[in-house]
Image (cartoon, rainbow, N blue to C red; front, side):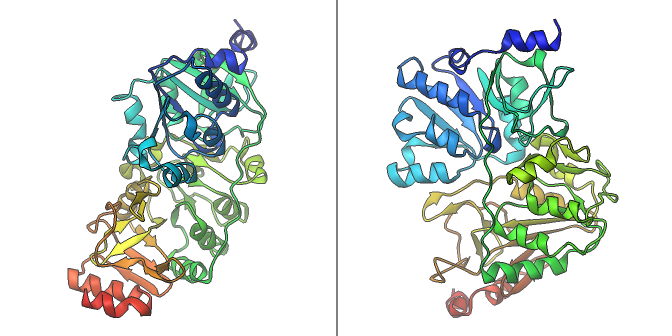
Length: 428
């Protein structure tokens, strides 16, 4: 059969495709922009009709489509979310209903594909993909991450073909022969809001930007701060990009000529990422761009792979730093707030890179200045251990933890705290 004939034979309605999923099984869904809206809505209809029960749903980083369908609280007595990174959807569920409705699974982002090829036996994987070309190939688009691995590990692969999903180069191809069933959709992709920066963010960004030389290979985490750092790097030359998340801020460095990727040891000349989020203009620019290379997260986030590149600079945010330098980047006010993600992966990869450095940043306070982010002891789990932490930055400066004793670390971190909290931290 030709690719077009296979496509026609496997095309069905969302309701027909949802009927392929059985009660009491494990399924995984594409994360972020790869959430398949029509499939999720059809599965929710089956749950409401009593045709689907005891469904274990595995995923990272949900957005509004999942929140309005399978993750709607009144359906969570029949759907058990196995969440590996809490977003606003899960945080709202916990706020309104407590923690009992969400099964949080602690795991490094780089290790998530291994779950789907080992411990978790997936009955189905559902995801949005870009349209098929004349040779029968889709791509995983803006969301390669664990998708390209889980898709092959699942017994059934059900995709939602959406012309809004960009066609992305790299290790992102999926052939029609691998697909169990497909549906067609045209829902616009999620668009990340523009960053809202406070004066503290601008001060931190200025400090970090001054630390980044020409030729550095960049990894930027999620949030407002990385965007502010990138805005200050437009005058650099020969930067490289090997990052978990690709954003409009990083794309801007490519567009202005600051990025050449010429000094990278892996994928020279190409920008490497595992998933992307931005606005419509960003997705249009990403579409069919041959120098943008998407790869699975077990490759992109592998510290051994990261460290092959010289001059890796990793920039990530945290919620708390204790006086020994350990960072809690995922737990707040007694609850899981996000997840470990790829922070430790890139901290270790950058530290092992020749000439590389890892930077973890935060504002000195939270809650409108009422709470210090520099604390005697963490309120949650250790996301990045003190043994791995290198540079810590707040709006009050930068401290290098390498080679410092515990007392020296405490003194350096107290100097980064807001002045209103320094005395009590010194006493602690």
